Structure formats: C-alpha cells, structure tokens
Image (cartoon, rainbow, N blue to C red; front, side):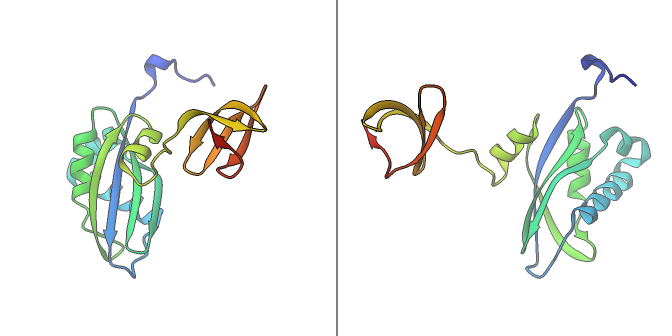
Length: 161
C-alpha cells in the first residue's frame, strides 16, 4: 500500500509539557496517555478529541517531576492545551501540568522547552599532534579535524592556537 503524497499527509505540532506531583508518586506513560484521552473526550467531545488526535510521544517521570511531548494535529493546539489543563490527577495522585511551549518538531521541543538542551560548540584552531588544526570545542572535549575524519580529544590532548 502506497503512502500519501507529502501535501496530503497530516501536519503535527508538539506540545512540550512539564509535570509535577508529590515525591512518592509514580506515573507511567500509559496512565498519562489515558488521562490525556479522557480529558480531550470530556472537554472536546468525540469529534473534537478525534480532530486533536493527542498522542504522547516522549514521557519521563522521575521523583516528583517529569517531562512529556504530546503530538497534536496542526490547528488543534489550543483545544489540546485546554484539555491538558483539565487534568488534575493521574491514577489518584494529584498532578500539576504546565505546557512550556509548542514546536513543529520533536527535537526543537526538547531543545527549546525541556531540559534536553543542545550543547554549545564553537570552532577554533588548536594544536594537535604538533600541527595546527581546526576543532569543534564542546565543554572540555573537542573533535579535531584530521585529513579525512575527526579525532576525539580532551582538553589535555590539545593546546589552543
């Protein structure tokens, strides 16, 4: 069976969500997904919840805080945010839910709104193997460009030029 052409494929938006509860609470992805569906159905009705098509893509909950990415159809972000705000408990445990932001890709949602920030890097000239070379520096490590490849190095292996 062929897939749909690109102009007919559904467009998605990704909601970056932070969760907070009591320290002894454990929340699973399945429980959070179920509560999202129930909240959307109760607030938006069957047609509205089907239009929003809320799906939990990424979920992590440790201790008392957690993060999730919820996929929603484009144009249905405001109803989805309203449905998420209706969730006040998951599996009997009180929970606070905060939508940090909306993005067009999962990666952008993680980097811009959740704790998974991209690493800052800069390109500089370094002395490596008694030759001056170009390297990409990140914190205390570097990727030094050799003739055809890169070599990994720590700050003890090179000197700044």
